[in-house]
Image 1 (cartoon, rainbow, N blue to C red):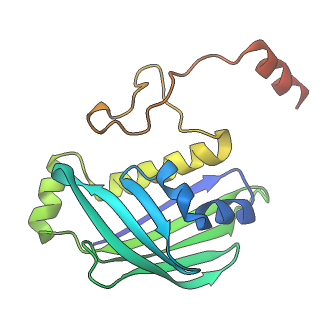
Image 2 (cartoon, helix red, strand yellow):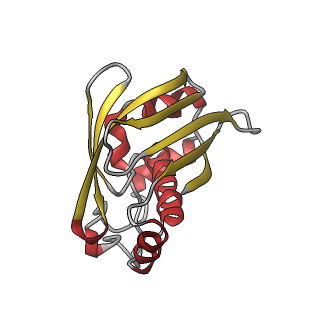
Length: 180
């Protein structure tokens, strides 16, 4: 399966690249990641949740990198879910923002049947990637994953990213915004 997604973040490419390159940041916005442990300059061990309460693990290596521009990786060894991907950090036309372009490919356990079952249980991979990039944008622009009053706890079933409910800006935040 190959997935692609793009988002625009109102931060310069070097800043977005640096945030992504610090692999410990990825679980702050990627819902299924439990932990990423760096094992070398270009290698790491990943742990993630999977449908039906399962966990999957794999080792990965960065196979291509252009600081501030691109990171490409692939799983190594006997990965539970073999995968590879590339993320590109492209200056946006506004001269301030970054377009983040992600391409992921991986083998879904169970093939087409596994994909259909995952979709049935709300684990549709394309939607997950879009949601992850939306959360990345929120973390980069606001410092946290934002939830609305209508859904302050996110996906309760998996307890993803519990956040405080949205609330109006304080007087000091309003004053600060007026000065900008």
